[in-house]
Image (cartoon, rainbow, N blue to C red; front, side, top):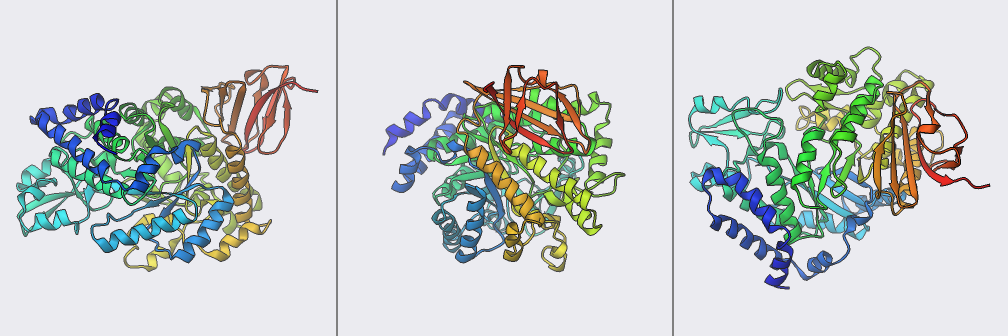
Amino acid sequence: MGAGEFLQRLQPLKAEMEAAFFRIYQPFHVQEETFDALLAMLDEQMLNRSSLHHEQDHGPAWFSSAPAGMRLNYSVVQSAAQISLRAKELRELGIGWVQLSEVPFPHTQSSRQFLQTKIDAWHTEGFAVGVDLDVAGTTQDDPWARQALKGDLSMQQRYWMIADAKLASLYSPFSKENETGVFYKLERIHQYVYRSPQTGGWLLDYKNPQVLTAMLKRFCSLADLGVDAIELRQLDQMWKECKALPIYPQIPDLFALFAAAGKLVCPSVLVIGHSDASAHDLQILSQRAPQATSILDQATLINGWNSLATRDTKMQRADLIFHALPPSTITIHPVGCDQGLRWNFNAEAAMMRGWNPESHRQFLTDFYTGQALGSFAEGESDPESGRCYGTLASWAGCGRAMDNHEPYELENSCRRVLLLQGLSLAMRGMPLLMDGDELGALNDVSFRLDPDKEQDRRWLQRPVYIEEKAQQRFSPLSLEYRIFQSLKVMLQVRSDYPNWNCGQEQILDTGSDALLVWSRSCEKQRLLFLFNFTESPQYCPLTSLFKEEEQARELLTGRRISGSQKTLDLKAYEFLWLIVEADVD
């Protein structure tokens, strides 16, 4: 292993990396030598990879089969025995990888060893493991921050620090919508430092190219732990100006540089971009990044919840037609968001429907906190950030239906849960479930009993895993059984089709705004996906789906549908995965 391989990997990436780098830093008069030094650092990091990791880098990518994943919170410390117990359940379900969230960056040897132990435990159980990296900021007890507080000028220059209070106030509204930037006075060094509205960490100043180099080193050090995926958190916060923009033009280039660094140093590691941006801006992120880079597609999740609340799929279809991520991007479809959900839908599509975007955001907030007329959901919101919190099952109405002893509404709530899970699994890419969603976990308000958590609403949607509750997945009359076993069947069907993600997709018009229907054609295989986002039966003309001489088989139930039928009836919140076949006797 030597410089020759690094140059071989660099050849198809260098031009785009150089263009991205100088689009960012040319206004700051950065010289060519700075870019060369960045490449030299990456070369050194690649050479320092262990022989085992080098072997993995040359083997087939673990994500080539697009396995389904489960997001777990790292701060909930688990022993090896607990990991083994949880792994058994996830294997039974059909999960192939776990994404550990809120992983503190390991600065010390002990914290690094602790993280390594957890990663190795999941690897022993046969799971690929992902971790996250906050690329926008650091905690207040980070070594960089501590050095800055000691007066180290070079470290102070890595952060958004301003000495003049009036100048600092110009930047105070830099965040999008009603998220306001918080600047905190550091009396010790007479500076104001900008803190992330979401995490409270100190925001880094990427106008300083040393920040990019230093964060890429941290990225590579995480890869050296043997992780299989690194999720880049807080992409939206990586660049700030006085003028607020949904996403600054430098952010796609910064993301592209991180993704390219992954291709150079650790190609077996999946680089995942996490952004709160709308579908249009996610599309821009994907276009700048190298092929086989991953984007967390929260736009599809937001559109799904919007369609359930409005009983209308037009906004969803518009994004799938005009702002779909390219096939070269590995799209990860989350079923929930562990940081809370912001309603960053397509504002133009909303206005075309006659909806005022701000009023519609308020409607969705009211709906999923149970305050809107006709709402079935239970959740909470943060007025300052505009984020909404709650588990999949609680937002779908399971908790309210059980509290009110309404079996009919509980059936509809279960169908909503399975509808969104079925949508995530049907989409091209990799589905990512939230911890507890496989068992229909409800909002957990016990976090308010903990003084360290009571102000953090994110814990509302992080229910504690209880083995007794998990055992209910074997009890046929339980909610856990209904959701777990249905999800297990969907994951099995999906894994049985190696070409599931292949082919050209087309959104189909059935004449009903309540239905979302699309096809995926690959060689001689054609898949059809139909979703009814209402509690009312919907009728779909079969002539818009396939020919009269053809027939379709429903993959989840085995049901046969002939093209000679005039219409297809979809019951309340019903969805179908169909494979079209030639007519046979």
